[in-house]
Length: 377
Image (tube, rainbow, N blue to C red; front, side, top):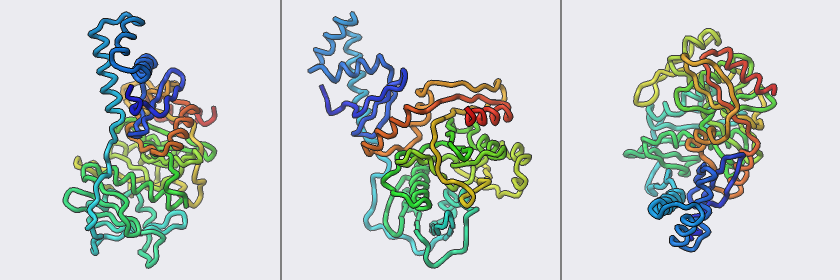
């Protein structure tokens, strides 16, 4: 029944079942009980057969069977609906002639970016300012970012590659970040598996990904780990390539005002960093560059550990291993995962090998030692 709504992949990791729907490129975590009901729904011929089976095998009342049927039907319909992010483009668009140019040199690549306004510039430039050089006549690649009405547009070498509503500017930032990462690593844009809203730390052998809700201390912890001798691979944007390695992204760590005092004691020149304001709430930020950068570092590492972090000065610090479903609740909604069927399979296989932890911390020293112990384990 409704076989076209079936998940393409049903992937079990311990007690967690993850469904991937090819039609929508959606990943959904379900319980074993719910999947049993979904599987029955998809195997039977009609509604009557489904309800009869439930009544006979589980002794469930008719009204409850009707509700279960309707809930599963709605669930599968919604799971197959595509989320439209970049669905519009005006063919008559022309790249503005006047703009603010910034040119960057990263990993022997020269990238020129033309911003229509200072507001648009503030979405990208502060994170990359440490790589700024004088404008050159022949960059390796040129991006143009501008706005018409309520739409932000991204062009690469005069070719349109994305348009996004202003309120969804983070999609523009994500697309630009992936394109930039692809250029500086000389890779194939079609072969990225995923990009995660996560920070990633490395000991130059392997990497650990840090996830958590906004404001939970991911970036501050990344900076503290960097001060302790570990290396920042990526902040807030971690790309995964088809070789199943996470790759270095050059953006500096965005540090909110509440963490300024802590990091001033860890980084000699922190006080000298420029303060930027970001977003409608005018949040004060400083951008802290990686200690090593591209010149003195390896560019990609395997990742088999993810840590969900939560900072709370009122709690006792602890580190515990958790089930992957807790990680997926945070990782999946904020990530871009390739719709390519082969890539989806690789992504699901990668999840099989992950070790997942939850770090609650109020003590910075405890958090640092915990991460170092995870690298050593």
